[in-house]
Length: 313
Image (cartoon, rainbow, N blue to C red; front, side, top):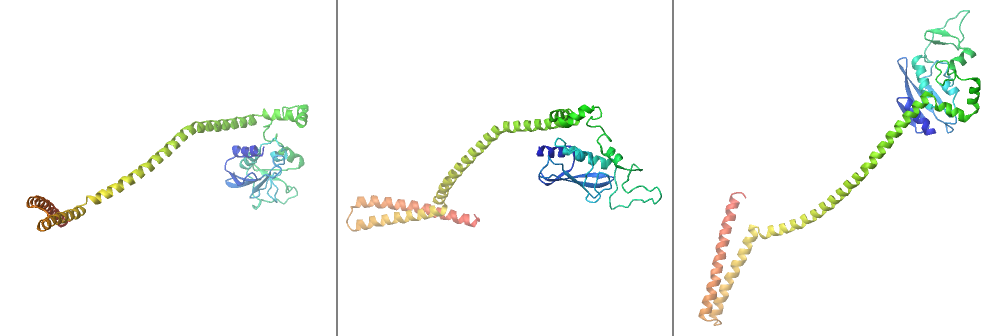
């Protein structure tokens, strides 16, 4: 019930500021072109106990304690019950100050010194000076003085007594009040909107889960492709080194040297009498032929590399 009362405060009033959650709130109103603030203090016993409303700056108004600024005599405060709406109480106070802007306590008011001087507890309203004796004050502060928003004027004494003693009858009477029904309609609309939003969110949950799974799958695939790329890149680097011009040049130099050594070995074997003339000629000619071919390739590659270096490659 405490939360519902706070919700009514936010529904029926604009610019509600939360000073301390569930305990203190601030609402601003326009008072004759000047802004006033009403501080709403919710004690530990609220909503069983009435809230405390303090206006700042302090106003000269029969509802307001001129010393503390507490709104003590507003109809909603005087007639407060657990079934009252906090939002409507604050709204009624704000509208009273907006429609009939009172003066501030620190503002001077004209004083009339005469034999018929008005008492200090009189208040100027709509340009007319009215005397607020006890009877007039009670009439002014009663809910029926401004508007019979509860419809009490049409009730009989028996019905009024029943409202005071029968809680079920009181709750039924309150539920039928137009502004309560309007508030219930607004609450129903809010609940419907929340339910619709919840259903839409649940409907999107499956899509979100599917997209999340797809992203995880793509992330795994990306990781695997990254590993494959790393392997292929390493192979490419090795191949690039193997087939680089400088490496080929080194391999050709080794092959030329090998072929030259082989022909020398064949000559040494022939001179040592380890091979006949036919075998020597065949092996020596093949080795020298291989040497010549490799040497030609080496020389040609050296020329090409030299040309590329000159061309700044």
